[in-house]
Image 1 (cartoon, rainbow, N blue to C red):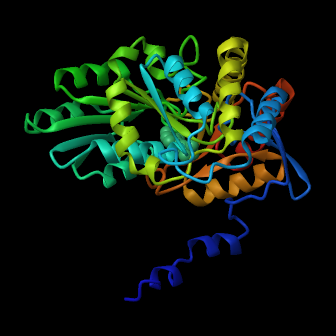
Image 2: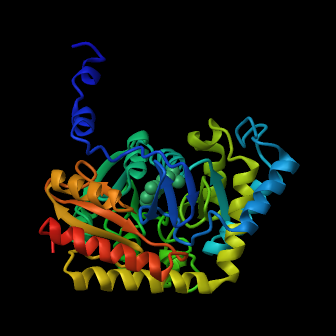
Length: 393
Ligand SMILES: Cc1ncc(COP(=O)(O)O)c(C=O)c1O
């Protein structure tokens, strides 16, 4: 069969477009943090990972502009060669201190962070253990390594223990979990994972993409939330959510960081994040550290929405964070509800197979520190009306 036959045979997107139900690649014409303009219409954004609501903070925009003036628009190379700025190094030091680790390493995206880190660490004599709900870039990073890949059911520590105990003792072992799962919004049971890592002498990576700024007394993430920072070997994170930019990083001990600095292909063979992005993250970090009231506001908004949605009768699953999925079930019905909400001014994200199991489609909603009560009340009223219309509540 010709290599392009799969493209000719791919009709899923065209079928949805023909039915007027294709929800992806929406063209945003203007963005004001909690609201966006699409096709001339205002939508309340409840589909963003901008948890701290910092993407339009004037202090951040100022810092980004100053960095543009000082360093230019891009670095035109990898950090390994010509693309390493003093502010990249400064950011690594500040991030490491923030998450409570000895050293930091900044990559160009969160996706590349996991590709580079896991791909470089898992060699031929090693086995990596993944939660089935781990983010795609963790799964892809494991595929890039040369070791064995084993998967356990979501949050099933018994199955993980079975896999660990049946692995030959002399193999290197690495467990990788999300701190907060990006679709369900549930928090990984780190006390159980750190205990298993210790018992079986395995390394442990926690991906804190959705936890930074959100969890822990200072917003340092899932390990801080559980008081287990020293028990987690590597904390990975991204700048594309609470930190209002693009890029990613790890925090770990100096030996691990130095090994990855010199061996992670996704770092060495890819250009570094541009100056304006680095400056954005530095300023966002400063704001997160010095304005805990933002995190409090985020949690107030999150609890308002969790309570509101549950009392209307929606099934929102086991979420414990600002990611609040609304369970619908059938894929088509999910697209239909998404569309009515969208037309009524509410921007949500439909999540369908293969991102979730067959029959478990949902609308992923997520909240920001900067959503106003008026916006959230509007969202709740609209969701209730549309939920009733479709017999979901
Ligand atoms: C858990 C998790 N890890 C990593 C990433 C990748 O981050 P980025 O989009 O910054 O590349 C994401 C993005 O959605 C994520 O949810």
